[in-house]
Length: 494
Image (cartoon, rainbow, N blue to C red; front, top):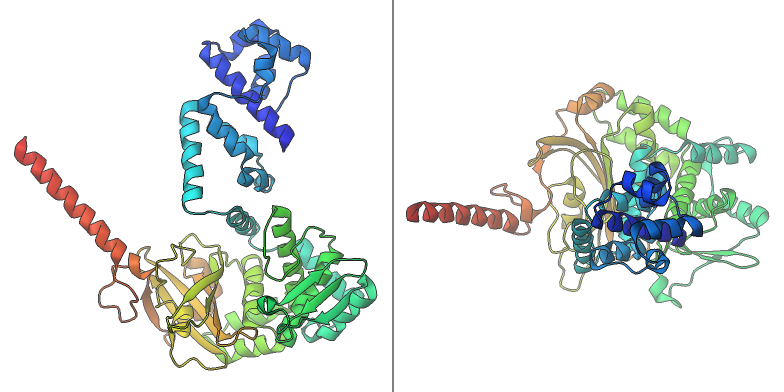
């Protein structure tokens, strides 16, 4: 990255010096004895000339050699330089999108003064709203998943091959003891139990990896067998796939690089594919989607067959249906509710993947209240919450976008957090593809509800579930009224 940084700074300086002198690329080519194409490559940050060519450039621009190669830049380019050195630009995986950091910089540097102002604006917004690098990295991961329809054939093959090599004919019966045996016998692991009473601040983690000559993985004793199997399968994935840079905890305490983010994702994907076989799931889903009515008992039976948590099962569905059923317009959301001393219903969006073209609840300002009409939030807001799984199906008509989603949600208590509950939702945009592939799309037994993003952004009148006044709508109306009165006042005095 440092070499690329040097090339970019030189390219920016060269372009600025050339433009300040009123020279075109053809003029500088004549003065320096270099080709126009080579000069263009330098200005784009793709080439860094050797000393003799740098001297020729300095003479052509009438500057000293030291001035040209120095990293010192003028005020207008300082912001661009700062951006190049920022943690975001250093760590963002531009290569996944067929770009380099320099390509992004070149988009905004045709007019350096405006580019500097634009970059300073973005940096200031990031500081003001405390946007962390890890948030950009996870956003990049979600974009990467969307680019591939959240389906990765190489990881599917790795999981299927692993099952076949070990002679496990039915992946739905994989036991955590079997996976533990693989870790111990093939990878030299120690598998132990985390003591949450001795380490209370770690009690919310599902697993902890400790590196060493004999690596160890510590499992939270409150995990269900299916959750234990997933954590153990993830450890196998790290080793089998050769993923060295990784998080040491089930939920990363710190994110430093995109390699860490993508490797964690790959290991988790491998584990999900290990526990829920792709071909088997495709067959079960095909039969389920062919039903004329939404058959909840059948869906629960599929879930029970895999002995998986609702989160693992539905996330696995999100990896299968885009490729095998053409249902790409979908979202996956996880909301969590942790009780507070004041009994306030504190609901957080803790995981989301939106592959649809329509905005659905996402990480909006912390002061806003998510619309309680989405089925996952209805389940969490229900004061009759019990220590069992609860299901809800509905067609959610998105007021602002006039779009409709068929949404299935399931809520359950969290095994590792007393009194906490979580809801998992999967929604499909009701478009022509969904109507062709899903026979129960218009099941009259499935209720239809008007929904929005947050209470503060919703203009729906007489909403019984409203947790806050429509403050942003009211502010917008006030601005509109003020603008109209100002226009009337101006007309009066003209």
